[in-house]
Structures are given as C-alpha cells and as structure tokens.
Length: 401
Image (tube, rainbow, N blue to C red; front, top):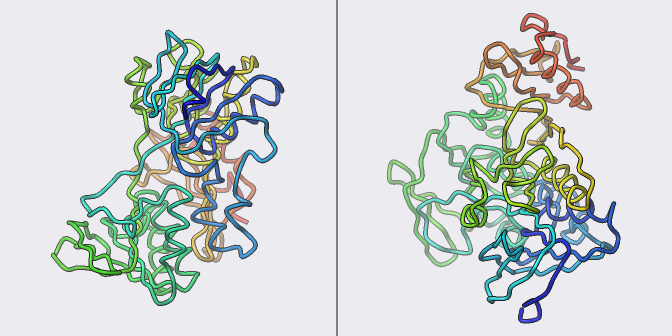
C-alpha cells in the first residue's frame, strides 16, 4: 500500500459496504470528476448484503458477481485495507501499512461488527456478515452436512430458512421461547416458530450457548444443560454493535453510533457518517440508528450528495423486510415486542398489519404478508404522532389484502 502514502483525494470513504457504494453514486450525481477513494477492510468490494442470506440461496440465477455494487463507477477501491486513525484537523486518515491519505471530505461508513460468543476460533464458526462468510458456508453446507444456527432474531431466522430450503438439516439454538419473539407479537412469533418446526428445523428454544469444541470436521456447541450439538458449521447471529472506535478516538461525538445532524455531518468539519454506524434524526421517529440495507442505501447516497455540495436535509424513514419460507413481511419504524401492539388480521388470518405503540403513539408498523404499503405505514406513524389518528382508528387504517 506504499503507493497510497501521501496521496490526496477529494473524497475518502471509510468502509466497503452498501452505504459506501451508495455514497459513491451520490457523489457522482453531482461531481463527475472529483477523486474518490473507498477503503474497505473486508476482502471483497461492496456487495448487496441482503443477498448473502436471501437471494443467493433461493435464486439459482443469482451470484456474488451479480450482487457486486459499483460496477462502472469511476473511483479507487482498496479492499483489505483497515483505517487505523483519523485526524480531522489535518484532514488525513492512516491505514495499517502506515500510509497517510489526505481528504477533502470524509465519510464514515464503517458499519457494525457482529456480537461474538465464547466459542473457539474456527473457520467453521461464522458470525455471518460478509461475502467470505457466504462462500465458506456454501462450501460447508449440504444435505450430508448439518448446520447449527445460534440466535432467533433477524439473521438467525433468515439464514435458517434459506439453508433449510436448500436441503440442509438445521438445528436452531435461541434463548427466547419463540423464533423472533423480540421482534413480533406472540401470535406471529408462534406462527413463525410452528412454520420452522413444520419445515424440519430442530428448535432448541430457551437455550443459551455455554461454549464449544472442535473435532475433525465437526463443531460442537454446548448449551446450558451441558449437552453438545454437533454440526459441520455454525452460523452465529446474535446482533451487532456499531463500529465507532475510529470516530471516538478522533474526538467525534458518539452516542450509540456516530452522531450526525440533518445533513449527515458529524461534529468534525468535513466528516460525514452513514449506514449502520450513524445515529441520525429520523423525521418521523426522532434520533435513532438503523441496521438495515434500505437505510444504508438511502443515507449513503444522501451523504455522498451532501459531500459533493448538495446541502440537503435527510428526512427519510427506512423500511426493512424478510422472507421466511412462504411468509414474508415489510416493516417501518420500531418493531419491539415489548411495545404495546394492535393487530389487524385478514379474514383467514394469513396476513396482518401490526401497529407498535408507545404511550398510544404508533412507533412502528409490521406488514405481515401485506405488500406495497410502506408509504401508508409512514403516513400512519406521522398522523399518530401529530394526534390525527387515535388508537381506536388503527384497525383498517392499512388494508390487509
């Protein structure tokens, strides 16, 4: 990386994920000649991350190459390059080789790191996050090689569903009583749990992982009662934490993420943040941090445009979605089963709209097997916040069919 030392770029992007790719696109919408450098710590360039647990397993025509982002864009990409420090006063970043790069505008799109468990180090144990994890799991998983998934949340449920649909025998270990119990009300969490069991997933509910052991081509995961669950591979999905270390060390304001203003600027001059790492001002819900791809795409592009001089307020409330066997959903806002909920089911109970409320104000909307209604969900949240839609008016506010 010696060729980077002393280089100067108009725009430097730290991070090589979806937000970074979107930022390049945003910059190029307004500036087709400024120099752009993307510094990605991962071994691959930006890929559309949802494909790693969705499309790449379920669509035979898909491939990692087709999931790659930034094709045709004019920029410099350095993969496997970790940024070790930022100097906002000098407008420089330093990478692991010791090379120093000067920037005009800087974007922190460092994303989030998976939470880890007390398990042995092994390439058969994946904290599923990047293209390398996908390739390794593809290599290991098969009809004759069972897989253990740990975690009953978003990633755990999604990859368990995808693997099972590929003929893989999966044991799913999670500490709740129901799959996705922290996200869904009991009615839907029970439906999901029954559906997983019906598709042959072995469910170990209410179990915590207490350790693991390696033996030849197997990984043993020890659960709370001391028993060991053996498999050829283990996929751990127990949440993530924002990667704020660079910002924090540079004196940039951090509070459950890198804090940004309405233009996605941090507390340091000419430094922006976007994606999983950014704590931003949602126009409907207030300050929050979102770990989903729609947020990374929209925020990344907006940050890139503002870095190139747009000076636009970011006022988007993102969605997220998933498919679990034959069921699917879209959602807007805060989905937390600890909130009060109002459920609106269709006649045959195959689809529902669930409203999540705090102090009788809608904070989130789940569209269970209900499609093309995310704008209506945003409208419900806005009207509820403004006192124009009461709790008693929620049933029927969004059609369930």
